[in-house]
Amino acid sequence: MSTLAASDLTSSELTTTSYAILGLLAVKPWTTYELAQQMGRAMSHFWPRARSKLYEEPKKLVAHGLARASAEQVGRRPRTLYTITPKGRRALAAWATTESAPPVLESEALLKVFFAEFGSKQDLLATIQGLRPWLRQRAALGVHINNAYLRGQGPFPERLPWLVLAGKFLDDFDIMVENWTEWAAGVVEQWPDDVRSAEPDWATLEGMARRDEEALRRLS
Image 1 (cartoon, rainbow, N blue to C red):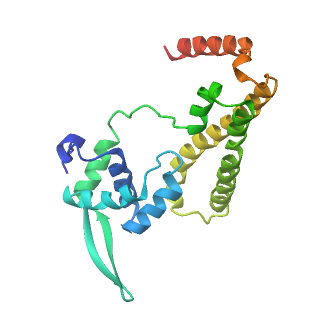
Image 2: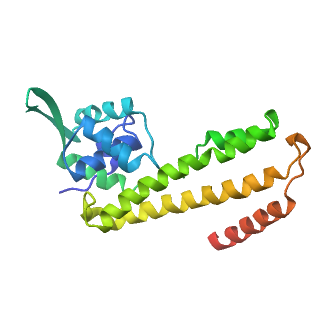
Image 3: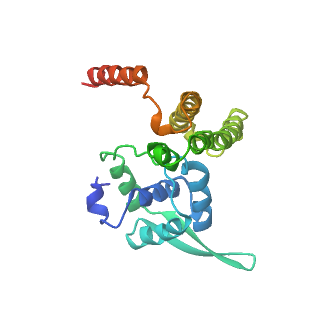
């Protein structure tokens, strides 16, 4: 079988989400509903996408010859099952060799912190503390998923070695956010009611500068 570059197999219409769907199809055939469910369960923490977009991707993969669609009847309900093609597997393997885009952080809460002077101290504290229910939800989901695998009941256990790699990243990220909420709330609680009169935490800024310099040396 010849090795082809990703550009030989696809067009500019294919996105990282296209390859995410293709990766799921490489695990097993799915319907569009099942693909959306699995994306929400397995990848929403680091690749969140609107469900409407997910329903478009399988048809795009079929149009490029990377997947095929077959009609099935489940009871009285028709459904379409999508299966990866050999060309799709080659495209997925080629994509794995390409350079990844850098990570992107998107947080409305952090945006509100960035513009804290336009709200009150209580607004700012509420924004910071408002992240904790989200953290609890993620922790509860992690407990459910991780313990299922520990009991030998998680789906696709043959994929567990690399699932743990991705999961550890997400777990460390959650711990970082939790630690930040505790630190940030403690800092803001010491501020005056008018946050525009607050003094910057110079010690923290100096520590950030030192850590960045150390990181730059390590990564050079």
